[in-house]
Image (tube, rainbow, N blue to C red):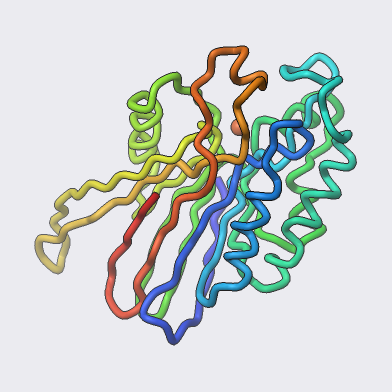
Length: 248
Ligand SMILES: [Fe+2]
């Protein structure tokens, strides 16, 4: 597990986070134009940040799942495209971290190429591994995010929501985020805790962060997967008081 403390100075009443993930560059059904629109929104909107949720690259390799002859470009070129995509965001200080993922892991298993670590090195970005604690300090407030790309599948929305909420059995955080499931789900709950300051409420926010894959005629359609929900979810973290809003 990785840990990064990030101080975010702001004069605004809140900051926004729009996590971007599951672009699957190289896949013929990857909607990179839509992903670029979200990236540019982050770049052009003040006090707005992003997390790279992983699976930037489709990375179909010899013997792996997926259709190697359909890939629009090789892993090497997907790697270069990914760096190009994130470079301005990293430069603007708006990229909080990059999650490692199952698609690039194929190259690690096959040839010991740690693609996401290499991307982080090139971009001077924070590496999130397969699970990461982000400790955000915004004004006088502290927010903790437990963030990962994810591995567990889910054939139903309720199954995916279950996997998402169960992340709270591994880590205590304010916000739980996962990619991988190619849908957008947001949820909140609240628990009570008794502290030395008395009885406190702990509001927890959960998000599955969407994808950029078209479905018609794709591997997903032929495999009878659910239609991917394209786009991003959005979080608002307040600086003047402690609260999290999460929306589709
Ligand atoms: Fe994935």
